[in-house]
Each structure stands twice: as C-alpha cells, then as structure tokens.
Amino acid sequence: MTDTDAFPQDTAGWEQAATGTLIERTGIVLTEVGARTTRGRMPVAGNTQPAGLLHGGATAVLAETLGSVAAQQHAGPGRAAVGIELNVTHHRGVRSGQVHGVATALHLGRSTATYEITVTDDADRRVATARLTCMVLAGR
Image (cartoon, rainbow, N blue to C red; front, side, top):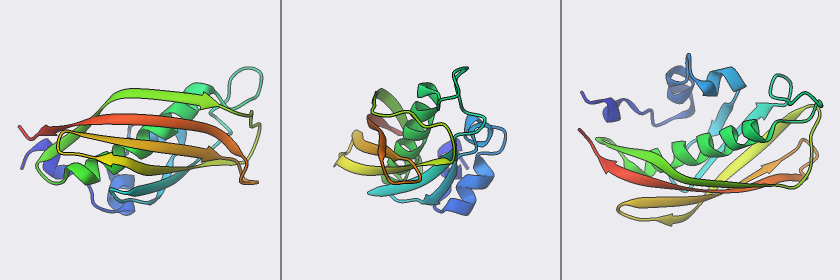
C-alpha cells in the first residue's frame, strides 16, 4: 500500500488521519467530504491573533485544508493532490464562535484541480474568500 492509498473517503477517516497534524491543532472538523464539495468548521478560540481576532493564517489553514481534501477526493486512490497556489481575501473579523468553510470545485482536470472556498461566521456573514489550486500527482 502506498501513502496515497491511505487517504480516507469519508469524514470519519479524515478525522483519524488528522491526528497529530495542523488540522487537529486548529480544531478543524470536516462535515462533508467530496471531490465537488467539501465542508468543515473551525473554532475561533485558539486560532486568534494578539488583538483577539481570528488569525488570517488560521483562515488560510481552513481554506487550504478543505480544498486539499476535496482535491484528494478528485485525485482518487493511488494519486496525491498537493497545493500549488492559495490566495485569501479577508472580508471581516471574527472574535468568537466558529467559522464555516465550503470548498466548491471550479475546475477538475487530469493534472490540476481548483476550488473556491468561502468562509462564513456563525451568522452566515462572509469572513473570507479563497482560491486554491492543487496539482494532481501520480502515486509513487
């Protein structure tokens, strides 16, 4: 079995795979996993900057996680997806609660996959918009 065969196909499998990773440290929970759409949430607490606002880097971690998980689902068994470009526009600050992200496929190609990730607060106000492009690699 190669490393790329170990990528889970469901939220429970990803939860187990995230043990000891940045996904676990930031408290990201995946609620839907799929190549076209992946959803998740992350607590604001523990992911703030000194001013008490959600750290922009934490928002980027959520966005890249959701897009990368979706791209891995697109890549399929025996292949891997790796991020090659991420950009994030921050629209509003958040001080408490959770942020919710949705990665939606914009392009699902043979060698690349691109996602738009929207991040909202508990009141469904847009916090950030991101775009992630991943390269799909053949397995080792």
